[in-house]
Length: 439
Image (cartoon, rainbow, N blue to C red):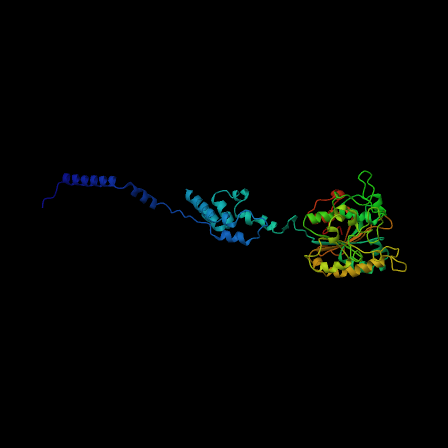
């Protein structure tokens, strides 16, 4: 067989190469793109897990919710993550997106995938606003603000002597106060009245008002306070009180006044006709000297005899938020006997405390963040402190506060407990540091 010449072989090779080039040029251009794409690394898209909704639901919810969990991080969050991952162009961005979604909870994966970690919380939407730390704080609040550390307060108002007399000068006269109650509580050694006269100091305690001369004298006649001269005993309706504040804020108050329920039928809000004289049981009840109270049904509804004190405290729900406990003239520690031949002096007040405070300390309401205050509303010498003893599970037992305090400061303390605006002179008073005594 004759072998082709070199020239013929070369021509044949050229023809074959030309044919191949022509075929390749006519082929589908999409093949080149497919083959090229096959050589590039694959991009992984990680979708935020559905556990985001579960996480939001498992945390405490505020009383007023804004965005339902289904709107915060469900399908919208997943779509956002997917879209962001697909628009990434470098392997570094892809790795950041994948690791961020995998290591964060559902609420943060959406903001990280979009490259703006603060946008979710700033806008007020998303799972952060529905289940973050704000939600936890809101769950512990009431309709008036932050939940109070103290939930119930009982103020026992004796008269005619001082805490210092009971604890130092002659402790044998009040053994229950000196030996059993003092070691349990915080002593306000320099708590003093703001006016002469017990009634005037109790009026200051529940209203922040400066007393009139008639109130300092015990109100010999039940007359209205004259708006021009300032003389008289009963404040006009526009003068607000702690009782009115508590009622308006949804809290409760009560005056436990011994013998106020002795009449038949009982009339716990009984008070004289205009200009008339006060009976002994009325003379130490400060709530009777405000038209904002006596002219409403709240007066009778919230004034009770001493027999109601222990039963009310057995139920935290029925116990008042703030209560003023006022013994009658036979049990309030004053020296003159209530009737000829009756016991008188500090020992009568100590017996009253024993009978009323001892069961109160065992009550459910006291154990539910309660506070008991024992004080005297007036001393024989108005220039000397009357003192006060505060007893509570929240208070350091046996402690002492040597700072100067008065009824305005105690009112301010109560108002701060329950997020109320300070009244009258309480605006300029400093609240008592109940849980941080000086020694």
